[in-house]
Length: 290
Image 1 (tube, rainbow, N blue to C red):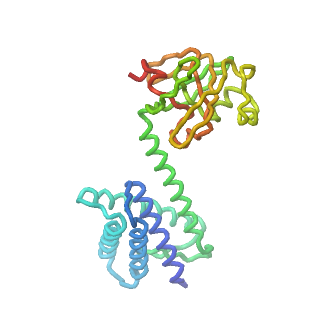
Image 2: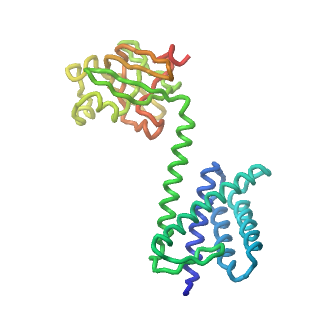
Image 3: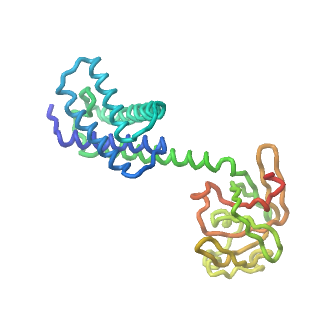
């Protein structure tokens, strides 16, 4: 079997780096020079992995060698402090290493290839250079997105409620975020304003986008619609405010219905920022959130 050292080194370097970076994301490790630490640790792992088969160690020493090297990579790359954090970081690193290793082995076996054992990825088959790295990179991206989604859901979970808008025979379900900083009030009706994004607005009303952007929506288009001044940090403008028949807020067995609430339209992507399509302030549903 012909082993191309450069390919083996690059494959292991990149895969080690992705495993360490995913471990850092999972453990919420954020510090200056993190990428440099991860790269140094990944390089150490790749070089030691490359020389591992040359040592010709017995099986039990191979295991010890791999475990010690993994611990050293965690210490260099993630720099945990304290015994507990070291053990948790080490466990996460081993778990993700096993997962990534399973992906690599799966690719090779799926394509009827062979793998040389050791703490290094050496395969005997015609796989295009970088194919395994590409797949591992895609796995990394998917896992990173899942971690971010979980963190966002955990952060916002206690402030997100189920809601329904009822209007003209339509019932639209969505999630709404309780934003204590939202104190927007309609100066005409003196009602607190629920803010919804465009993705939800277009489910309620079928209106041309250009007319909305040109701020030419009138009462003939939406009952009670008008524009109000609003401002955020470093930004401001006119917001379309309108009324619907009712909004129902739910939390477990509890729910309230608000008749003819004031609703404002934003083109901000609330789904991306708050994992929902609407924002309410405390005054909008004071009885509900107390």
